[in-house]
Length: 359
Image (cartoon, rainbow, N blue to C red; front, side, top):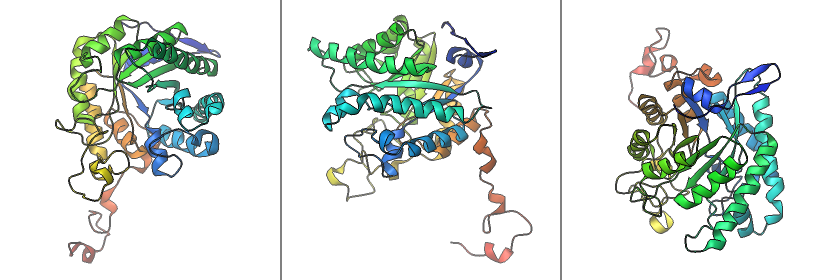
């Protein structure tokens, strides 16, 4: 790939940077903390503010550990939606700096627990929800928000920063500039709504090409779309750009009719308030681990080496994806072994009487 490399010395050992790692093969990036924390009862759907970082940091640490054990090469700080606008909505803007710094420290500390693994830690900036193409004041507001978050990430010593879930091309430009001005490796992942274009009307591949031309080191897509609908656009991105490409879908079965999970129907249930399964009634639309593994393999076949999973991710998804691309994560020790199952097993020591009934 034609991207620059930024290796650095760590003690007496040269640590490989993200781009060097991507040149060598696929890397896994597990994220999607919002939904995982909501399901566990530590975060409110709707506001989706990661207060858990300050209120229950041990829970965030444990989720990092689970993703690392499952095969994630990247520990992504849980700063997503921990920005100034989100905190304003819940009246807690004074918590901005401690929340951001706390999330970064948790990620760094979690990575440090696994000294035998060559882990990377990344910062994260996301859609601000204030950008308005016709209001220059919101552009300045976005710039301030991105710059302060990137500054804290750089201070924490992250390996790179991801700008993600942004559907305005112009907003992504602001985020990218903040990252590059700080001298950091930039990953720019768009979230593409229905219609297959950014809010301004740029195709996914054209928007990604713009970011590459402006200095992005990795470009791609995350969130909104399930594996199939994401891959549909990723192939076009891969054909358009020369740098590395990232793909991090949500683990839900979105369709051509409903390509994004923010507006999606569960046709098997008639008791969902408002008939929209997003965000707390997506259970019946959940992808299984094998579907996510197929996505990972498709990525490798299409030379998409930054592979991950977004909102809804669980460790079993990550492990299956990691194994599918040739990795041997710690949690591989506990891969299923149905040969030992009392009913389905093939072990000759199992009782035949337990196989004679259909459950």
